[in-house]
Length: 114
Length: 114
Image (tube, rainbow over all chains, first blue to last red; front, side, top):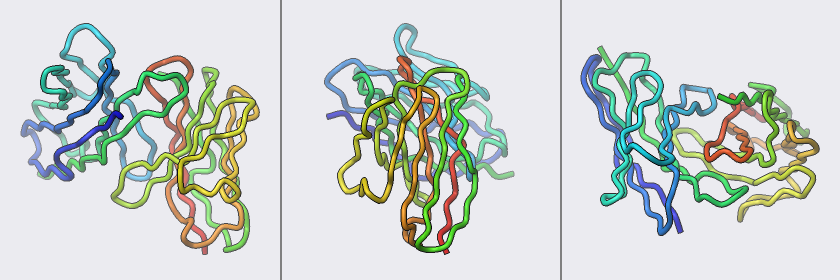
């Protein structure tokens, strides 16, 4: 069975500092990987996705993530965060089966302060 | 990206009444829709998977008679919380897929039962 582990439940950082949110997955088959962001009282917005090809993927709002198959990781990074990046971030994996839901990690709360 | 619209964004109802939440895919046909419940500071809990024209598949522990799901068309799924009680108060989110690896999410509905 596939699963997603987000290693940090909360990540506090100062504005303009770099940040990395960690995500590990387990799967016996090829997977598609995603990062979603959720602002308070809103739904989830797709930040970026890895489907195939280059292991470094760039997303919206200056975020990027690197797929590492040997370490089964898909960490999210941003070189310089803003106050507005404060939100909940979810890593997810697609079981690659038609009609099945994405499998989510428990989420990481990113808190950016000045 | 594809747009999923969820309505209403907030609803307050009296204990014992029923509430209907709508989820629409605006610019694509969603063969599969998913309903999630999110508790404060917690991740997403998949409630059910809804396929157009067929009965929804509920996750273990979710009462299908309490949370009625209808997916009558390729662009609309509804979740009805029947005989709502204060413990049903939560944030409900829908998502939709049609062939793509990623899922697109609605804005969420904050349900408060008083």
